[in-house]
Length: 209
Image (cartoon, rainbow, N blue to C red; front, side):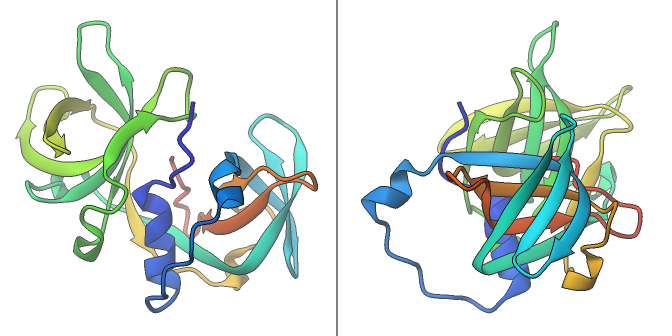
C-alpha cells in the first residue's frame, strides 16, 4: 500500500514553484487522508479544477487546493547519474534477482535527503519507489547498475538502456493545455481528488513516474 508520506518528488514541486514556506502543522485528520495518484492527460483546466482523462480511461475532476504547486520534468541521461546524487527510482523485482528501474528522477542537490526511503508504488503492479543517494554507478553491457543507500540500507537497481531519466523543471499554468500529460498526487476526498501538487509534461517530455 502506498504510504501517506509524499515522496521527495512532491517536495521538489514546492521547491521549484515557490520560496521556502513554514511547515504546516500536522493534524489528526491530515494523517488519515488517503493519498492517491492520478496519471493521464488534461481534458480542460479552469480556475481550481483540472479535468483529467486517466490512464485507466476514466475522466475525473481534480480539485486544486489553495496554494497548489506546479512543476514539469526535463530530459536527463543515465550518464548524468553520479555517486552522491539523490534520486527517485521506480523499479520492479527482476527474475534473476535485484530490481530493474522503470524510471529515474534526479533531484536538485538542495533536495538531497528529502522523502528518503523505499516503499510500495503504483506505477505498475509490485513496483516500488526508492528515494536514496547513489553510492556508486557502474556501466555494464546492458545499461547501468546503481547502488543506492537510504537509512543505513543499500539497494542495487539496474537501469536498462532506454529507461526514462528526468529531472525537475519549472512550469506555468500556461502549460496546462488539453492533451498535456500529468502526474498528480492527491488526497482522496468525497468530492473527488484534491491536489496540492501537479507535475505536467512539456516540450515532449512526460512525467514517467
